Image 1 (cartoon, rainbow, N blue to C red):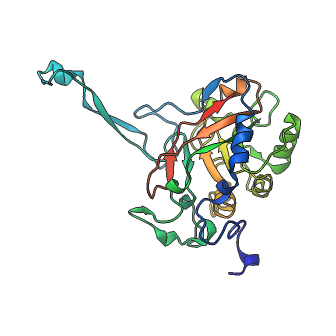
Image 2: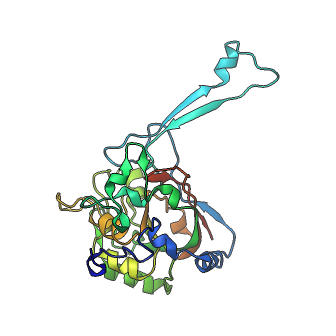
Image 3: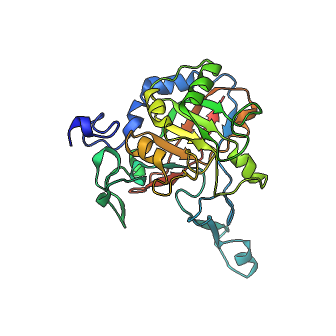
Length: 294
């Protein structure tokens, strides 16, 4: 395949690259994020993890939480030399809560990011583009709230278009720089909690947003819905077109199911965003507990 025929950013950071647009995240991007800190207030953007609870995309199972030792063991007569302890386990989908997608998550025509073969993702995990290649993310987050009272996402099924992203960016008077993270609130999570939304339909970015997002230099896109992009796509033959165009073709990571409700009350358009995926060797995604520092 010639360079002219390659999708999006394939080859931009070398033929062997496994990090995609996270290559934009350099020291300057991190320092730009640190410069956003004004008050030092720290907000968690993560969903709570509770056994059997959602939200979770259809087809995945909710988290399970098991105690392997608890106070009942001691009440039943278990003896320890001078101390007692409790212990537990969790079983969960790596995409089953607030999480980030690895570049190995999405294929088309037998290829994932940068032309790596889908055959490299086996029953033992991803041999290329796994979540361990992502590393910690410390950068400037730019927050666009489309679920505000005057925003377009008052209901689900709304497709956000590139001109709406550009207009919202101009309204907050922020110029994106390479390595920044785009944080989008659609209001879906708040509606889900209120019983007014389901995991079958949500507002999100239209596939046409891919070029705009990439041209601004974003390294990742975070959203309060199940997929960043609108769902369902409306085309049964192309179920996740933005995942293909942005994550597979351009190497821009997706982070989903962010809890942005508290951030939306702070009147801030930028923050320091800190994300550290679990170092799962060969993983195609990871639960995360992202933090915004204001």
